[in-house]
Amino acid sequence: QALKYNLVLFCNLKPFVSLVMFLSPPHSPILRRIPDITKNTMSNSEQLLSINDHDFTMRPGFGGPAVPVGVDVQVESLDTISEVDMDFTMTLYIRHYWKDERLSFHSTTNKSMTFDGRLVKKIWVPDMFFVHSKKSFTHDTTTDNVMLRVYPDGKVLYSQRVTVTSMCSMDLSRFPLDTQTCSLEIESYAYTDDDLMLYWKKGNNSLSTDENISLSQFLIQEFQTTSKLAFYSSTGWYNRLYITFTLRRHIFFFLLQTYFPATLMVMLSWVSFWIDRRAVPARVPLGITTVLTMSTIITGVNASMPRVSYIKAVDIYLWVSFVFVFLSVIEYAAVNYLSTVQERKEKKLRERLPCTCGMTHPGVMGSYSEEDVNNTGNYGCMLEENGAMKQQRMMVHLDIEENNQITGHVGSSAYSSMWVDTHAIDKYSRVIFPGSYTLFNIIYWSCYL
Image (tube, rainbow, N blue to C red):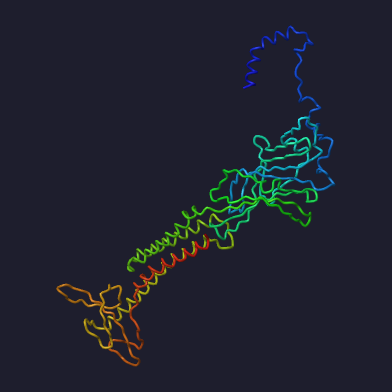
């Protein structure tokens, strides 16, 4: 607003100024301009900082004790975390603090001077790099995001805005009920601990984060800073700073996309236990459909995961669910096979024994039952009772004494029981399958939650 006011004032007074300049003598004070301090060689920043008087290829205090360089970091965003690539991407402001007496200057106001990245290339700065990083860069829009601030006593603040993609070794044995710990490591590339001492400037308070940082799959539980010494056999010991953060994965997404569909498929396979065993077109497609659906779920989960050599928690759940679905198909195969075998035996028995209703055949002990024809393996006779036809079932047991011959039986082998109740298999399955799967879920969630 002040600039706009001055421009308007200048435009209004321009004719008057022109007249004054025309009438004024050449050496009049009116024509004297304010000197441009940027043209004053004595105030040039490079001369003021004596940059040309020193060799900045060497560290401050070369030959003396190690230069202490304090570091603090502000995390702007935690962008992505990839289980497939085993890495994470983070954008941060990293600031370095040190003292270089070669940059000290005289100032009556004791104020600092701030520069951009052009001066950074002419002085000494710590040669920091990110250990285990796959890719990193300094932002350059609209200009290099670099700031250099120099104080009269030679203290220096050097700040950069950096995005780095670094390796994170993840243990996925509890996926998706896992908690991951990743770290970003900062270290000097050339200077050992004899020349440069890295430390967190404010201790545990050296790391600050944006309150709006959030991830779709993870909950950020903790950020912390640590420092250690790293040894390289060829070059020596180096100071290394760590930014460690702990992430806990959100489970709700996987409950909706993986666990619930798998559980529903297992429950759907139990429906076949209530379908009549003779309904082959109903029970077989139901079993095959559930098996194929479970295979699709397993394939979809593994497609988005790295090919690790160990078993993950989700693998245990999906494969156990797959086994339950597969066993339901095998159960019907067993029922159908035993029913077929039983029908063949009944057919042979009916051919050898005459129809006996209400009487006992020699060597044959008869009993009556009101159960359905498919629940028993006996033959039946139609009797007239109260003017209606009622089917009576008789369970036949053959009890042949050794070395005895019974009329109507051919061969020396004896049946301890001619009948296997195939419907009992379905009845037991209706209890055993749900009970076992419920027990598995209790054990599974108690172990991993």
